Every structure is written in structure tokens, then in C-alpha cells.
Length: 395
Image (tube, rainbow, N blue to C red; front, side, top):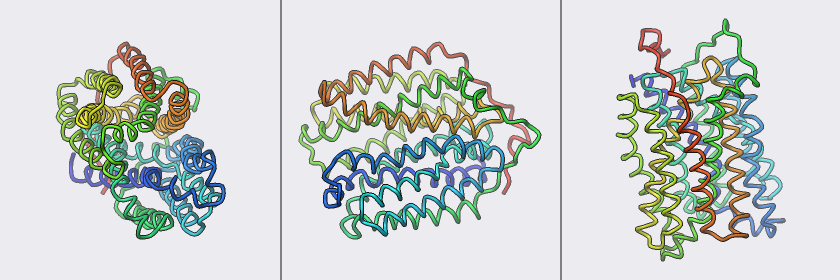
């Protein structure tokens, strides 16, 4: 990537990661804090307070993605970040389950992930777009790992309201970055935007949307069991972050050469299939894992595949969607959020009915179905020829 592309991608990856921190940063501490709040004795209300962030996001991804196609990415991202900050401040001001739920709903309404992914596509050449998407997609894994490290210390010093204050401050900083660091995208006013129905029923996009739903459903279901698995293997809950952070960082180092190989040799379809196979292998290993070392190895294999797919999927969606990137990525992010909710709900049900190991076995089966569908997918779209226009990025 040239300096302008790298600067823009890193800025957008940071904004994307900030939104994911809004989801992940509460996971290690919220269930404990909520017990002391009115209604906190009911797990359902605690779960809904956490889950409302994703549900509201799912409702706004498509409208805001389409709006970003029409009026540009910058105003949509600024609007979304302003809602994120406002919601965080409401949560910080009221130590009450209902008000926290309202605040998190407002935070979720600023659903700008689709606009951010489309903006990355606008500001990068196709020759480097997958690498750019890898940085943005990797911010999800890094946000998750970072939340496990910093959530408890912030909570001990500043309580739950302090976490929301930190998120609000980061949100304001992200608004300044959006306003003064990132260039505006060029709006293609002469191209008529495809309808939502037309974009939704593009066969290649339907396959990718199905894939991201399964990817995140199995991810959430896996993390419903993983903490218990590590504790049973002899690792205290307070030490889990060391495993997560280590395997996430190592997975980035190991997936980068695979991704570069796929791009340079034009073998991204092969890399795509290998990544799904990695997930299937990891899920099968989870079902047999009993030692900390075995679990860590399985997690490393899992995150290599997961991070590869996080880089490839949005890049492929932008390439298949032509001039309706915001709409296509809005649909894509909506199915991702549905997958997160579906994985939590069905994963919990499977644990209650069939036990922990059933989650891994059924996840492996679902991922095998995805592999079969992906195997018969057509060739990936060719990249555009590198030209002066393709390389032009406003600074």
C-alpha cells in the first residue's frame, strides 16, 4: 500500500475496532456488575442489555450503508460516531440496567461498519484491497484480545461508568480522525444505485453472506464453551487473556504470508477454502482438547482461519458488488450481526440440551456445509488493472 492508502486504512481500522470495543469491553465484567442492579438477578435482562447493541446494529446496517452510497461515507460515519458517543455517555451517567440498555441501543444505532468497509474499498486499489481489509478485519480480533486485558483494570479503578467514559472519549477522538485525517470518497452520481433486492439476490453475495453468518455464529458459540474448557484444563479465568492475546497475535504473523501468497499468485479462492478447512479442524480439535497446550494450539489454528476469512470476505463482497458497495456491505454486516445473535442463542440451547462438546461437533458440521457451498463457487472476480485512476487517493 502507498502511504495514503496505509494511513487511511489504519485510521478506518481503528474506528472499526473502536465499535467492536463497545461490544467486547463489557463482556468480562458486565454480568458481575449487573447482579447489583435492579433486575440484574434475571439473566435474561442482563443478556438483552448486552445483546441490544447487536440487534439494533442489524436494523441500521443496510439503511446507513445505502445512505453512504448516496451522500458519501464521511457524513454517515460522523453521524454514527456521534450516536456511539451519546449512547456511551448515557450509560456512564445512569448505573441502572434499563438506562444502560437504552444507551447501548443508541450506541448500536450508529451502525457504520458497512460504511467503513465501503470506505476502505473506495480509498484502496484492488491490488492491495485484501491486505487493507485484513487490517480492518483484524481489528475485531485485536479488540477482543485487548478487551480481555484492559476491562478488569478499568473496572477496578473506575467501575462500569468509567468503561463507558473511556469509550466516549475514544469516540470523540475517532470523530476528529474522521473529520481531519480521512479523505472524502468520490460519489458516483452518474451510476444508478441497484435496488436492495437486486443486491441481495446476487448469487455470489448470497454465498458470502451465508458464510459470514456461520463464521460468527460458530465463533460466539465456541466462546460460550471455551472459558469452561480452559478452567477445566487448569487455567484460572484471570489468566485466560494470556492465551487469547498470544494466539491472536501469533495468528496474524502466520496468516500474513498465506494472504500475500494468495494475492500475488492469484490463488485467493484456494486460500479461502483453506481458511474454512482450518476452522473445521479447529472445531474438531476443540471437542478432543483437554490440556492447556492442546487448547492453545487449537485456538491458533482457529484464529489463522478466522483472520483469513475476516480479511477475504468483505474484500470479496466489495469486488462482487460493483457500484453498490455500501448496500452490499450493509447486508453483509446485517447477516454477521444475526450470526452473532444466532450463535449465542442456539449455542446456549445446545449446551443445555446436549452438553458443551456438542457445540464444537455441530459447528464443525455447519462449517463443512459452508465448505461444500464454497467449493462449487465460481472463480473469484479478477482485480482491476492498476492504473492512474485506480491508484489515485485524495489526500
